Amino acid sequence: MLIHFRTRIRSRTTANPFNPLQTLIPKSSKTLKMSAAQSDAKQKRPICPSCSKPARVCLCSRIRTRNLDNSISVTILQHSLERNHPLNSTRIAKLGLKNLNVVTVFEVDFEARFEIRLLEPGLGLIGPESSGFDQVREKGITQKAGFEVKGDGKCQDEKNRDLIDENENPCEKLDKGSHVDAINGGGVVINATMLKYGVVSHLSHIWKVDTHGKKPKFEHIVTSTMAKEALRGGFVVKKLGRKKLEGNMELELEESEEFEIKVPQGSVLLFPSQNAIGVDELKSMHFEVKNLIVLDGTWSKAGRVYNENPWLKLLPHLRLDLDRMSLYSEIRSQPKVGCLSTIESIVYSLKALGEKVDGLENLLDVFESMVGDQRRLKDERLSKRTKD
Image 1 (cartoon, rainbow, N blue to C red):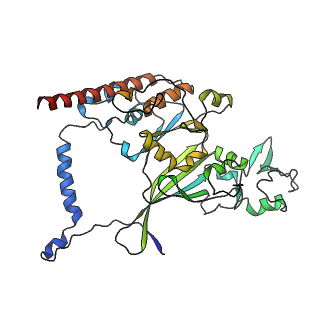
Image 2: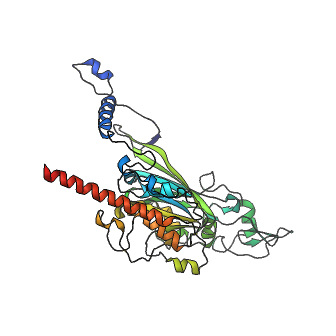
C-alpha cells in the first residue's frame, strides 16, 4: 500500500450534464455565499474584539488591571471546540495575565506525529539509543554524560551503565556519538505517531530503556535517569496533524503543522492523574515551578487532549486539593466538588504556588460576573418563550 503526503488546497466542482456552465461554478463558492449571509445575520449585535463577548456583556471594563506580570508563566492547551464557547474563561486569562500562552489543540483526525527536541541540545547525545548531558560544567571540570574526563582524555569514572553496554568502552562511545544529531536529524530526541483516542502506533527515542517486553510508552522514558535529567532542562514539542484525502484509490495523507510549544525548565501539568502530587509535596521536593500548563475544555474534552498528547506524561503532574464547588456549577455541569473552570484553576494554583502578583482575585470576580450574565440571559430567553 502506497502512502503519499501532500499539502494542498482543493475546490471541488459540481458537474451537471444538462448545464455545462454549472461546472464552472465551484461548490465552495455557493457555500461561501451562504455562510457570508448567515454570518451577517449573526453579526447584527456588536462584538468586543478584545474579549469576544457581545458589547452588552463586555468583560474588558471589569478587569481592574490588565496584563498582570505573573512570575509563574501559564500555558493553556485549549480544545478547539472551546474557543468560541460563551462560558469559556480563557478569555479572562488573556486579558488579565501578561505571561500567558494559549495553544489551540485539535483532536486527532486520522494520525498525529510528535517531534520533541531538547531546549539545550548542547547537553549532548551519547548515541542513537541514549542521551544525557553532554557537557556539564561543575567546579571547572567538564563532564560528559556522567563520565568525568580530564586532560589525558581517559575516563576516570565509568558510570551510567544503564546507557552503555557492558562490553563497550565508555570513552570510545562518547567520542563516536557525542554529537550525533538524534534519530531523525534536526535534534529530534523523541518521535511518536498517535492515532485517535490516545493510541500510540509508533514511539522511538534516543535513550536505552528496559520496557520488560512491553510495548514502548512515554511513561517508560522517564524511568531513565539520563532522560529525566535531559528533559528537565526543557524541550520543544511539535505536532503535525495528518488527514486522509478523499476521492483517491490510494491512501493519501495531508500533513500540516498544528503547533510548536516551548516547554521550559520548571514546567508542571495541572491534571489530577494517579501520579499527581499536591502543592505541599512539590514544595518539599524543592521543585521551583516556573511554568504552569493547564488543559482547557470540559472534562471529557480535557481528557481527550491529555490522552492524545502523550508528551504531557513526561511532566510532573500537579493536583489542587480544594473542597469547593466551581462558580460554573449553576449553569455548566461539573462531575464533582473540586472540578473548577480554567480561570479558577489558574488563579488558585498560582496562589498556592506562591505567586505574589496583586489582582488575581479580581479575575475571579470577572468570571463570577460573566457567569451571572449568562444566567441572566438564559432567564430572559426563557421569559420570552413563556410570553410567546
